[in-house]
Image 1 (cartoon, one colour):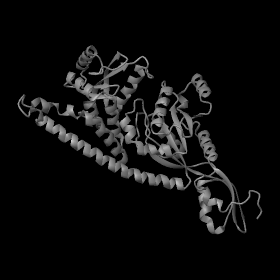
Image 2 (image 1 turned 180 degrees about the vertical axis):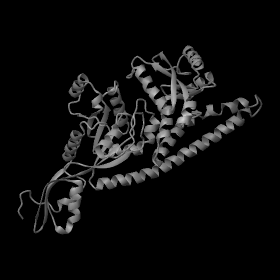
Image 3 (image 1 turned 90 degrees about the vertical axis):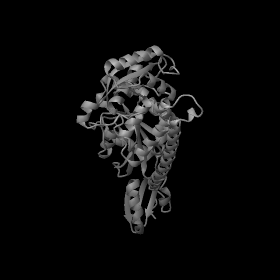
Image 4 (image 1 turned 60 degrees about the vertical axis):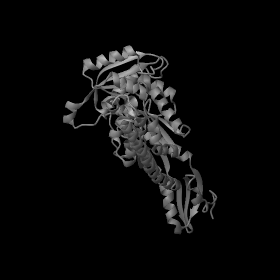
Length: 437
């Protein structure tokens, strides 16, 4: 990508917003209709700061190896960009380096991006934490490495023709230098991310040792995960009606009705054709999903492509090895679903939790469902804890569900449901459930 779409101030946006033409290939066997896919691409473009002024589609089973679209359609796009004053052409799929270079030759005065570059740019704009920025930088560097040749094409064209050593001119020298620097930066980013991943792993192990029941929110971008996290925990996390409003994972504590503490982590949203490099770069963050005791599959129940969106989420979870984690489908934005669709969804997903996080509808029922799942993973013990171990009683109140509590001259008697991770701390004080000792 030769130039990023940068966020601007409100005054700058009025004058400097890019004008974009969208290009898509209509495949007969595609899971997503081309209209739906381009509509999502338009939302991505608008999120990045561009106004869509035209679209072009071509029906073909597989992209053209040289220019992605056919030669005739390519000429149409050149004319469309000229007639609409577009300075940006965005393809709905990832272009190979060769395809991108050839299309750029056809549009020398217009920037050419593919869906991957556009998503990377949005991630770059929205990453806030150090880890998030490192992850995005790594994905962008690895994406740009095989495309560096096009960035130095002007130097290659300036070389003196013919003669011995002509192929080792300024362009080639600069290209090799840039490749070396890019590879070096990729190595540095991987080392930095490995260091951050160690810190994150220590935090996760600490929570595991504490017996905290861990929940992860997963779902398509803009399904309402951040709004749901706020509704459940009062976290105050940014939530907005835009794609990838938040990227950095956020973990908050929540107390269940019986007093047990759990954690809920909001993870990065997924999307159709999510760049593989981003999945790889964000793997340390997505490890929160693999370590979770329960996944909440947050779905925009009002979306026309909700089934395809859920499939896109499942594909990413399969990529990171988390597809078999225990989970609950959360049909969010329930207030935007009409009665007919509600009946169909309730029949298709009878075990789903139906919520409208923005209004609070269904939140209490979802919390009760979370409590049921947390209790299902617990071990029931009857224990007598000496008064000298008040610290263990405190652990029980924070991390377990207290069924009953009483006191006698020897200590505190508890019947409790406790997570398997911390059960050994209590077993040493275990007694028979009906013991009067």
